[in-house]
Image (cartoon, rainbow, N blue to C red; front, top):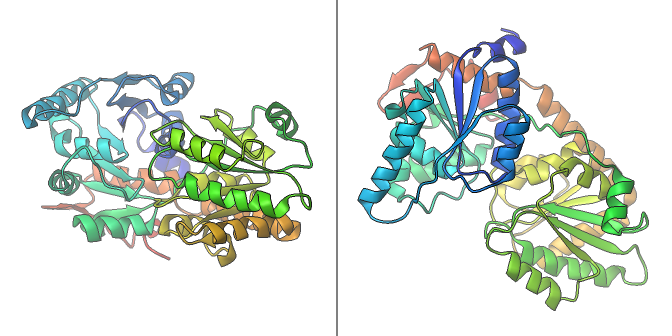
Length: 408
């Protein structure tokens, strides 16, 4: 079956993407990368959010003509109150008459795993984007919901291993599929962005795309950037670090640390950025400092934009970067090593340019492999068609048929 036929095989099916809310993060951007080709191929794509507070995800859905539904429910309180909340979600979803539920992030994953049979859906898909678990539900409910979900998909092999080792998932039904990384055309180019930010062409700009929450390690990056500034003072370009991401709990502490380190002239806080492609065109290097990652778009999008990337040596970043130079990776919390990696690429323009080309080529190779939308929709199509054998814990795929789901 050709790629366009595989996507079109879901024509007329109502596919409801389930988000935690309207906030736009890496998981939601990845969901849109799947939703848009499905919609173009004739699937009836809708989005359902478990919170109705305003955010950019809804704006994108409305711009693309994807119907948005939401219900604001409190997920705290007594056990009975939480059960009622889940039943309310099931009732609203049932009115949408879904054929397939595609849950994204752990909160929707667990909620859909527990209630999907009550919605009338023929299939529920668990999409694992990180390796953090969930604080909203107990470990027991997490495992129960995972066992009850027929199809589990993740972008990273280490995330699959985490689901198996930590949560008892059947490895035969957890599929690894690399998502297509699609960057929208920039709304403004390098010169416009630099002028807007007050950065000259002689300055060296680096960026980190990450919301400000506890899973990201902005403090280590700021302390490393202090060393970078000190090392280049009077002898190299002026280094400017651009931190792009929405406030999510740690922004005040990060800003206080930047103030204490006297980095006001060398760090800018951009909050959430609509024009990610434009921002990436304006910088010379991307950095991702994190304690834990699934398969981070904060590395993948800069790679697709043709940038060198420095990161923390954790499984998700390793897997995203591929076989990169080990000098570009620093152990978690290692300020000196992270600073050395950044300085290496600032000072060696030839190495930086070669690494940037290799990163772009790596993303293009993944894009042309039998993965992404093609493999994803084939799994759904096969499941809906009853071609997978059902067992008590879920479904078992013919892994020889889905080459994209196996570790190379």
